[in-house]
Length: 212
Image 1 (cartoon, rainbow, N blue to C red):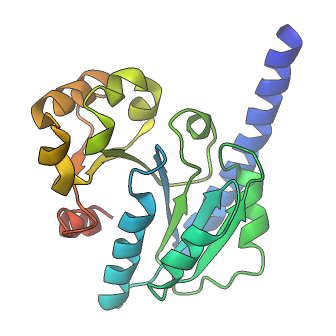
Image 2 (image 1 turned 90 degrees about the horizontal axis):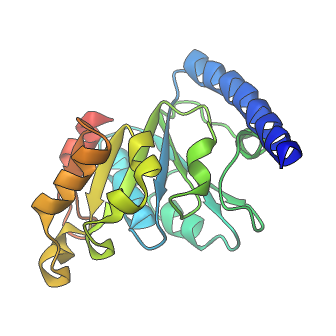
């Protein structure tokens, strides 16, 4: 058991060292990096697609690195916004790591890009421990998932700098108790900003872009 723990510490330590190098690199170029984590099906890709499209309309430039076990379907969807997009196939790994970013950023011209979004692999456990050199940690939590999600996955909510409640257009149909959900988020991470959003209707998009 002790050997496994030491190996785990070594992996995290190496990742953190590379993440620090990446963060310094991002800072020097003025690139702001947003790490987005959520359960599968929470609406990450739909929300990012809408975000990137709005940035394009405003004359601002965003880009995205998309992490999935297999396929490039999400990257294809995001490319429809006109923004630069690359896919990272993790081939079984349940999270992105700093070395993956380093590899996929190589020879990628991001001149003029203000915001780089990292769409992490869909789950609320594995990605939390891995620093990617990001400036903002964002957790998406959809109304169909139920109000008790923060209580079931407290480390994920404690990790986040901001929480986006997604699919608010489905809240009534899902029987989602908004006040109870907000109480649970506050219990796990007091004071964390919470935005109520919908990729379908655009609810919360202006507030989200202002925060960015």
